Structures are given as structure tokens and as C-alpha cells.
Amino acid sequence: MKSAVLGRSRDTKDMTKGNPVSLILAFALPVFLSQVFQQLYNTADSLIVGNFLGTSALAAVSSSGTLIFLFIGFFTGLTMGAGVVIGRYFGAGETDNVSRAIHANLVVGLVSGLFLTVAGVIFTPTLLRWMNTDEAYMDEAVEYFRWYFSGAVAMVMYNTFKATMNALGDSKRPLYYLIFSSLLNIALDLLFIGAFGWGVWSAAVATVISQLASCVLCLVRMMSPSYTYRVSVKKLRFDRLMLREIIRLGVPSGVQNSVIALANVVVQSQINTFGEFATAGFGTHAKIEGFAFLPITSFNMALTTYVSQNLGAGLYERAKKGARFGILAAMISAELIGIGHYLLADRLVALFDQTPEVIAYGTTQAHTVTLFYCLLAFSHAVAAVCRGAGKAVVPMAVMLCVWCVIRVIYIIIVMKFVNEIRYIYWAYPITWCISSVIYLLYYLFSDWVHGFEQDHTRKMRKRHTA
Image (cartoon, rainbow, N blue to C red):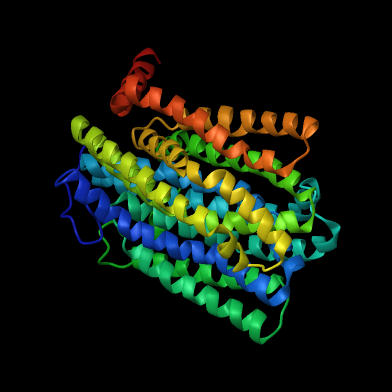
């Protein structure tokens, strides 16, 4: 049942009206800028640690970056599902359901964050050993990741708030809050490590404090009386129907993130066997590569919000038009960054660590994968369209089969017969190519635009037969 539509405030943006290209660009640009500062979060620790504390400390920070994404990726996926639910009801003008979905999402985020905090702190040593982390920097790695996970609830809640605001078409305020917290993180890193001379653990503490600051800023804004869909503590409850819908769309996205991370954990564990320099080079490349993900992530968020709002309003051709532009824009921008990374690889790695061996490993990986970033962007962009259309199971299945199973099988076989690190690097472009072919076929020949109607029909049939 539709409720009366509230007047749109500056907090929200209706993406069902206006030029699709300008709407997607206007949404994606603030997200892009916020991702730049988010990447500064991820890069500042490694950059400052590598320059002030040396290669061993850098290896400790780099040894298990995939470990963080393995844990946090699943819960971030849940917020993606909630964003689709919120965007769908927002586009349809069902304001009561928008409010219910927002509060249910916050409950999911809070419970997930608390669970992740406890699990991360307890199991960090076990997971680091499972990933073949070198004993030379094991103690530093355990310290770093335990402190990092101690603030996991703030990280999950910030992503929850950001997903909610993005689903309502507001991509600017998360940017402002992230700019502040990113600059705070850099300042604290320099203070703790550069001025006080504290160990690698203090870089994690700086990140936790900064994430908490951005989380508090989001919460204050969303509880403000002037916010269109004001958050109220009294409305926080386990809304069974909304939770079921959020979980139905969010779990596949969470599983998708986790299986990608799980495959990368296998890759990281193989990289770690090549020694400290290889680990530092791989981790450094990952930090630099994060910037290639910026346009991908930006257009992904814009696409998911745009598609969910327009399909929720029944505007099928409009959804297709925006999807085509978003996919193409993501591919072009990612490839341009990839070319720049390829040409400047050695100098970029040297910013983190000037050890020749580290530079060599990082440069070799860049020269192997960077020219294939257009395929990476295509796969992620079509996955974003699928999520926005309520087809979250599709990208989960593709990523599970290709980016996890095929990638792991390839690495196991290659390492058994040819134990050379450059063949591990090739696992990425090979699997990006395979997934892109599958996504292209699905995008062209499936009826993805009617995902919400198909879901509604299934629900009605269940009710009728019950």
C-alpha cells in the first residue's frame, strides 16, 4: 500500500526524473570523491608505516588486507541489499516502507558490527597463521589487526549509514563526513607514528578513531529533525518482513563479497610464501590498485540506486538507458586509470617502499593486470545493475563460480607445476575476462528489468497457496 509521498528535501534525490546521464554523473561524482578519501584511509597506514617503520612493518600491515575485506565485505553486502530495498520503495513513493527499511537496516548493521568486532579480535591470530603470515612480523600483524577489528562496529555502521543515504539519492553528505575523517586519520597516523614513535598498532587505532568520527557525524545528521526520513531510537526493532527482504537481497551481495575475499585470501597466502618483499610488493600494489576501483565503485553505487528507483517506479526503458551509460562510463574511466598505473608503476610503488625487491614485485604485478581494468569494471557494473534490479543472486553465483572456484583451482594447479609468482598475478585478468563474458550474455538476453515484478508474483503465489 502506498502512503502519501513526502516532499523531497535536499537530503534526497529522485532519480526517476531528469536526464539519466546528468543524474548518474551528479550522483557518482561525490561518491568518487568520497572513495578517494576512503582510499586515503586504506593507503595512509601503509604509506606512513612503510616510510617510518620499514619493510617489516609494511609487510605486517599488508600481509592480510584481504582478511579485513573477508570479514567486512559480507556485512557491507548486507547494506547493499538494504540500499536496494530502500531505493525501490523510495522510487515507488512508499514512504512508510522507506522508514521501516531504514530502521531495519540500522538494526542489521549494529548486530553485524558487534559480531564482527568480537570475532575479529578473537580469531585474528588463527587466521593470520592460516594465511602463512611470516613469523618475522607475526606479532606486529596480530597487534595491528586486533586493534583494527576492535573498531569494526564503527566501520560497519558508517557503511550502513552511507548505503542508506545513497539509496535516498544523497551522495554528498557521506562525502563531507569522509573527507573530515580521512584527514583526521592521516593526522593521527603522523602524530602517533611520526611524532610519538609508536608501533604499527597505532596506525590501526588512528583508523578506528577516524571511522568512529564519520559514524557519529552520519548518526547526528540522520537523527536531525530536518532529515526527511529521521532516524528514531524508538523505531529500531526487528521488523520481520523488512529484515527478510533486506536479507534476501543483502545476503547474496554479502556472499559475493566474501567469496571474492576468500579467493583473495588464498592468493595472499600463496604470495606470503614468497617472502617479505613479495608480501610488501603485493600489498603495496593493492593500495595503488584501490584507486582504479574508485570510478568502478562510484558508478556501481550510482547504478544500483538509479536502477532500483526507476524499476521501483516501473520506468523500464529509462532504467536500461541509464544502465548502458553507467557501464560504459565505468569501463572507460577504469581503463584510463589502468593505463596511468601501468606507466607509473615503479614510481608509485617506490612511494611506499624504496627497496628494489619490493618495487620489482609491485611493478611486475601492475604490468600484468592494469591493462585489463576495463573488464573488471564491466563485471562490477553489470553486477550493480543486477543488484538494483533485485537480482542479487546472479552476481553472487558468477563471482562464486569464476572469481572464487576457478581462480583458486587455477592457482593450485599453476603453483603445483610452475611455482612462479607472476602466474599468480595472471589469475586476476583471466577470471575478469571469463566473468565479463558471462555478464554480457546475461545483460543482453535476460529479463532483468522485471525482477521486482517477478518477485512480487512469486510472493502472491505463495500467499495464494498457503
